[in-house]
Image (tube, rainbow, N blue to C red; front, side, top):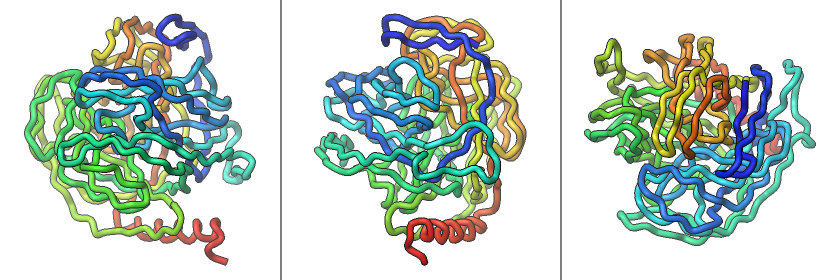
Length: 430
């Protein structure tokens, strides 16, 4: 396959031939945070992605990246990041730019926080049950950050100067699913981004979230969620009231439609005790297309929990067609088929893998449960530069995780076991 990347961003591309292969890896139990801070002041327009210069972020070797979801800037969300040159997971990396998708017009000022990265430490190679990490494998650095926290309160934009430490957290592989259900009727248009009111989701303290990838609504994809007012800390309770929805086609979202699903992961920061509230069944309508018609099927969504395996794999996403793309114009691209076994979930690998843009989501012909096997043949791709994607080019990479799915009641047992394990590891229990 071919990798196309920027030798000099926006000016000169370089092509590199590599072998297409699936790679397995193991995740360490610690995640570090890195803050993305705008280096320049930039005017932004709703729905038009912009490449923001950020203060350089140094990323250690043997790591992969993901966004700390829940919108961190009032004007929009960072969809992806761009590194200087190109590197392997095993190499150190320097992040220089953020791909920022505005949800409204405004000005991103120098010093604004535009996103937060989660840095996962990984190992590749021969993996077995005895494989583990030593302290020397995880290069952690505490960062003191002085920047602007930008949020809306009562409809008014606020820019608050903060100075705080950014370190990280111990993560569990234990999570639950939260359906993202529209609380309003709204028209959407292809390629446009909308902030849609949803039925409120209350997140427990010490949780982080990320959207469950593979489109759950035929009209588009949930790329981010948002709180009302000032963003909460990870260790605080959070109330999610909006979904940031990128439309793949023209259509009507109705109150009660399922827009997407959140993965909610439990974490350990300082003194922690997971707080679980009883969960009730929820009603939503699955919206999908079949034989050229749009269907809305109502269903009862039961609370479910899952436990992710610590060993995962990367699957390269390779274009299976030639396609001219234009900046800001959402594109549907045919890819070489990716086969997924039952009980798997996906996350695109952060750091832009094609010079002209980034994968927003994956498309499934007909909706299927996580428990079912699937074949992915198309992706949603958001160009940030004009250009032409060629058949055989790498356009992205996805992380594939195997999961063990159980009823919500099992979550309490899993969490209790994990809490005791963490307390022993942190020296809180002799």
